[in-house]
Length: 306
Figure 1 (cartoon, rainbow, N blue to C red):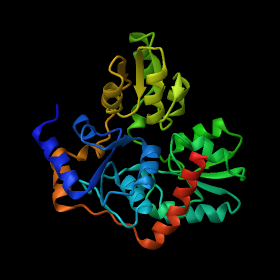
Figure 2: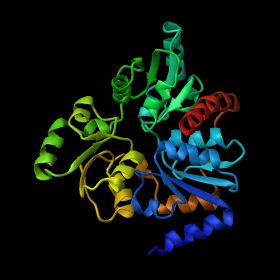
Figure 3: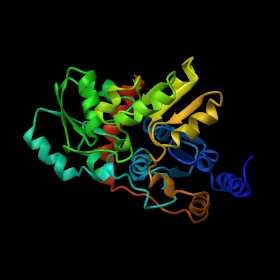
Figure 4: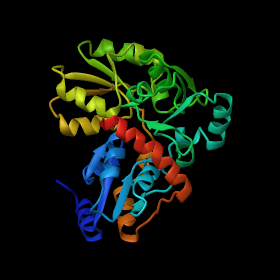
């Protein structure tokens, strides 16, 4: 049952010919009014397919909304709170990437989608946690500059025969760095029959103690397909919200209850409503940067769907 404010937002969507996209880490009240929920890969693909809507309201963080602009240059892309930034995306600048490219001229540049548009413009191809291994394996180069998440870079290195150089050296997601091996040992003692699913942004020591290392879309699929009832999830807390909605018969246990992305939670129903009413805050990307970045993003989508 939707509340009054949610119903007002749905009416506004129709009036404005708008679509609301939301990441899996959004709180339940935002998830309930979204037209599409997904992980970074699913959201990239969805934004590349939007045709009949004039306005896109993006309930996620800055780099996600920028990617929507890159793939939809003629649509109005709005973000309800302009302070919703991804700290990791700000850890790698375009200038730093250019310096690495000078040092390693024969390397391919694979950037995590968690980067700003100016960084994406320097990449050969983009990836997400869901397709990083496939993207890297598709490249002819054996030397890969990969950033900005060091843990995802190490995960990809373990899964491929490529030489992976992480850029920068210590790029990370502060939420997934919260998890420790002790958390897994403790939760496993409490839920001995549970399957442990952790995100590849977690430290390698945490990954090694898990049953599967998956992006959020992979977690959703695994819970739905597995005969297991109990799952311990090593990712942002509201991923349990998404899975609970779609698989109510499963018992989902957060690996750490305080693993919350504060900037993801800046969006509220009131801000979404105001975003639609006032058509704010408009997300923009300089055209030259957008066109360069589009090549890398589109290449990722093409490889993923091939």
